[in-house]
Length: 208
Length: 208
DNA sequence: GTCCTATACTTGTTTTGTCATATATGGCAA
DNA sequence: TTGCCATATATGACAAAACAAGTATAGGAC
Image 1 (cartoon, rainbow over the protein chains, first blue to last red):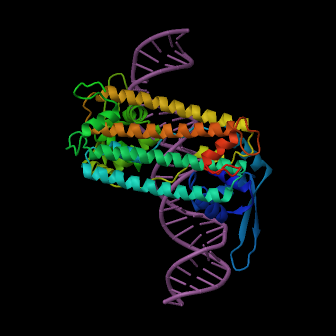
Image 2 (cartoon, helix red, strand yellow):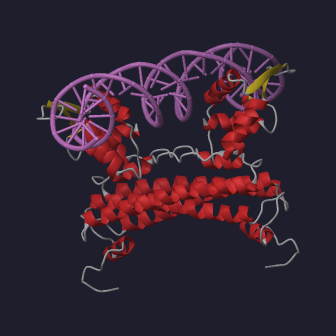
Image 3 (cartoon, each protein chain N blue to C red):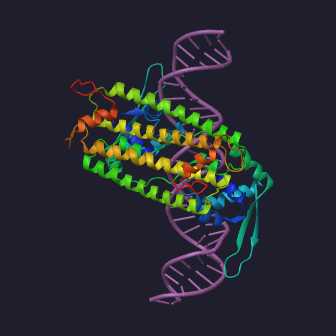
């Protein structure tokens, strides 16, 4: 349902082809908050047209294939406004990396460290991409952003917060593994670091 | 694919029925990182059995329906270990709340604020549930957690970090909306708060 | 001519997720 | 007897997601 409303949201700002929606809006403007596959876009547009939330019109082009432009209907706008104003359930959590970590106890620490570092590197790349997106926003919004632009800014900040939190947590995991997990050699004074992270008492009964 | 490995991961620790897996493992032990629907569990178990990664045996019970217990095979263990050690792509981002926010510019500020507060409340509930999960971990791990338990702890911390970051960001959004968005009345000295958040220069040309 | 790119649209197939529904064996309360 | 709960298993239907493949109109490079 969210993809339908994302498409309606973009069409509320203008008429676009499936190709525009895919390449310009989803791939360029909002990769930080939603992703849409080409097959999905066209299929969803079909469904929206069947439901009379959008209409389409074919425009011939010179030197290029015809454009099939979609426009939002009144009913489509109503549906969008209704959706935008209603609270929706937060989806159940599904994080494959956490799952992987949970069942990684038989993995040697070196391999585990490598896995965590690889994931951290990928997260760092996403963070860099978000920073670029953020910079592009600043350039386009200028000194007096509109309400729409402020809302967009908020979404970018939301995505940035999520990546940063993940990276910080991964750094903590790296420290933990480097310090040595139970059943493996600590590399440094790891036991104290572990205990501090877990809020466990110091093993020698100190009150700190 | 992750659900398959989650199921294999649990079966690597013992033999369980579909019901055990659903009610005990997914609903109680790992809601902070994965969710599985009953229909999915049974379907996936069927598929795993067809692939010879698990086997099943029916045990009659007194006063209760028969139990169909599943056990992991050698091939299943190999598949699990292989999966646990390999880096996997981070899924594309899809955050319906951010999408909603992006297209909420026509929403009155009061409604927008309500929407954000409702979401924040739901996030707070998830955080509380995670804290309970965390406390249960501490009680069961005791003073000398195993490697497995430390990994589990890391997953709980990962989920806690995510919820906390989301709540902090939502608080910032609430402040922003309360201060008044462009095109609406500021409630307090909101313009400066906005500018500081966005790293924009002060409008009267100060250098700060 | 082939391959690649860009602009464009379309559809098939499989898996995952969600919600719904059904079955069976008991016990207990109204 | 009905309804509820717990233990258990099973499956239907539909949509979303992912990957694959195809079509068409051009231009440019090799």
